[in-house]
Length: 491
RNA sequence: CGAGGCGUGGCGCAGUCCGGUAGCGCAUCUGCUUUGGGAGCAGAGGGUCGUCGGUUCAAAUCCGGCCGCCUCGACCA
Picture: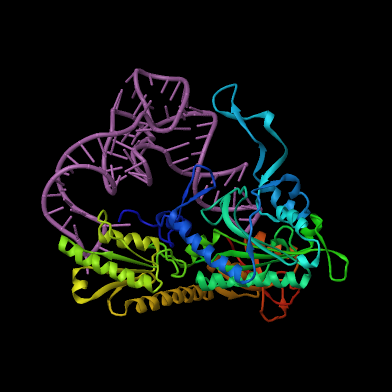
C-alpha cells in the first residue's frame, strides 16, 4: 500500500484531511487558508450545483451576478451586519503596484490609494439591496427571486479544507417580497429545498430548525438551518435560510408603494449553501478506505476496468467493455472505461475505491467468454459475478440501492448518537462519552445558553421545527421550558 | 492571537539528542519477467538539508534571529 489513509478511530481530523487529499478533491495552495479545488472536487461541486440550480428554477428563481467588491461604507449601513462581518473582511485599498524604491519587490503605489476602500464580499446582502432599491418601486415589481453562484471571502483565523476556508464557493439567494408572510413562506420553502437536497441527493439526513438569537445570521430576524451529524458525533450546519424582515430594506432605503398606496419597506430573505457541503458529504459516508459518494452526485457512477494480458485478449475485452459502457450510457448512467495501460488493474481498483466511485465493473477474458462481468459496490465489501444480460437495469437498481443504503446507514448512525437528557450532569457526561445530538430543555435565555456553551462547548444547534411541544424544566436553571432543543458540539 | 508540530531529491519521510560531508519508500529512466487487488528482480539519474547569522578544523545536526506552513484552542458557513 502506497498511501495509507489514517483510520477514523486513530485520528478523525487527520482521516478527513487524508480523504480530501487522497481522493484528489482539494489541495492546499500557496495562500494560507485557501484551497485549490481539484477536478474531482470541482466535478462534485458542479453536480451539486446543477441539482440545486434546477430546484431553484423549479421554485421560480433566476440567476444573476453582483460585484465581487463592495464599498466599505455599504457594510456599515446595517448595524448588526457590520458587527458580524467587519472582523473578517479582506479590504482593497490601492489599485496599483510599484517597484519598492528601498529594495526589491513591489509596493502598493501610494498615489493609487482608493477614495473609498472596497471590501471583498463576505456575503452580498448590502450590494444586492443597494441594487434592489433601483429595481423596486411598486408592489407590482415584487417578488424578486434571485440567486447567484459566487465566491466569497471571510478572513478566518483557522481554516479546514472545505469546512472553513478563507475563500469558498457558494450560492446566495436574495429575495424581496411584498409582505412579511410571503417572505417567511419563502424562507421556509428554501429551507425545505435544502433539506430535500441534503436527504435525496447527498443521502444525508438533516434536522430542520431555527437558530437561537445568539446563533442568528448578522442582520436577520430569524435564521433557519439544516443540521447534520458527522460520523464523529459532531454537528455540522449544512445550510441556512434567513428571514431578514425589513432590516436591509431600511438600511438601503428600499421602499415600495403597496396595494393600499402607502410606502412600505420591502421584506427580504437570503439563503445559502457552500462548498462546505463537500466536507459534510465526506464526513457522512466515507470510510477508512477512502471516499464514498452517493450515486446521484458521483461524477462517475460506474467505472469499468478491463483486464487482459495478450493482444488478442485486449481486443475482445476492450470491445466488450465498450459495448457495456455504451449500453449503460444509453440508460443514463455516468460510466467510464479505464483502459489505461500505464496502470494495472489492482492499482485501478484501489484508486477508484479511494475516490469513491459507487460501482466498479471488472471484465477479463474469462468474463467475456462467460458473458459475465464482476461487480463491486463501494458501500459494501465483496464482489459479485453478474450476467451482461440486462446489465443496465441491474446497475440502475444497484445505484438506487446504494443511494438508499447510504441514507439509511447515516440515519441509523445519527439515531444511535442521539439522546434525550434532563439533568445537567448527565448532559455533560453524555457529551463527553458519546458526543452526538442531545435533546434537552432550555429556558430560552441567552445567559443560560452562553453558560452551557462555555462549560460544555456544546451549542444549541437549533430549535426543531415540526416537533410537538413538550413542557419541561431547563436542565441548568430549572426554569420552565416549552420544548426540547437540539444541543451538540459542532464544526 | 495563544499552544504544539513541521520545513531534507517531484511526493512522503529517516537522520538532529551524541557534529565527520546525506539515506529510505513512492515516483522517474533502462532491461528482463509480469498483468483477475496498489507487480518482482537488477541497474541508473535526481538534494548548496526553509532562510540569515554565530560557534567549530568540520554543521542537516549545536546556538541565535527571521520566514513559511500544518494541527489544536479562542472567532466563524
